[in-house]
Image (cartoon, rainbow, N blue to C red; front, side, top):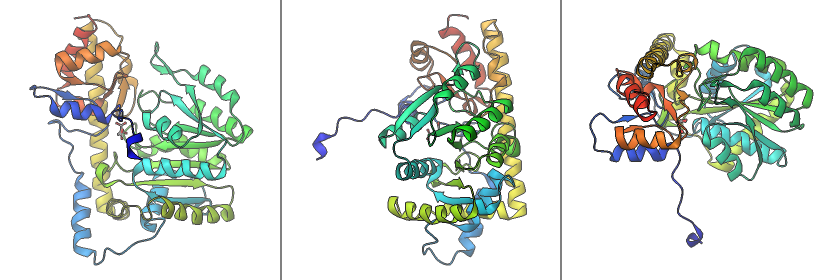
Length: 396
Ligand code: LMR
């Protein structure tokens, strides 16, 4: 059987990390995978996480299984963190998953079971795994226009026009905040228009929120999703604790499904637990136990909020620093959009040759579509990066 494998293509984001690690040059800069970095380029363990781990170490007396759907404390705290009081608790089914990616997978698995012939709509561009996972599972997919490369804003008109083709039962994947890879987000007016549209057409909105707290704040980032959740009869959500809790490798995420009524939600809840059983049995517990403890312990929660705010402010400052540096280096306002984008990423609009030149000539690692991880530029790294960009685009 195995001889049928063809050599695998490197992952467009993770493949870059390997090249970076193998690069012996001093001053190299990694702007690839979306992990937070401090001024010295490290990805620290969040203080509250470390403290919660110590507390768990002291208090845990068993490693026996928890529950197929995962820890109730974790799921309930995450429901409140993401949804606030937008939806009655009885209408929400929740499932602990291995990371946000696991939650996406379980939402797709649900679609496979309940509406396998429906189409999954994914923004063009999007996080590459969205389309890769949907096609891997054999779904019909459709990319919808999202980003206007000229204005670096959302092309709302083109997007809404393409939505005219949405069919009842289709799954419409939206980024809750901090759009990956562009950094350009939908405005509230557009969220309201999409909400009306999905209700009118019987489409199931699926909001992936992997960066809550990295844009404008925890509640601010969740506001569009909460608005939509308060209006629609049905909705799916995938939330991740990789970024805002820095728990990347511990794989902590949650899938939520809002049903039209309590009875439907209860049946959905049972089916979701079985879906975990069918795919991998139990989701990993450690990181979810950490998150549950942090969110339910006032001192830990307050410290986590402080650190999350620090991370967000560092990224916002790096955005303005980089936009300023590029304005100086290039003598143009072409990159001012970076200061207006939100989240970890912006797409610079460089050609593949310019991205290659950044890597080959300057040891600066940017994803092939010219997406940069803003967090990789803190600690003054925006200066050499701006100079390198100016050089590769011929403006210095
Ligand atoms: C990213 O887009 O860099 C992150 O979501 C990490 C990943 O798994 O790709």
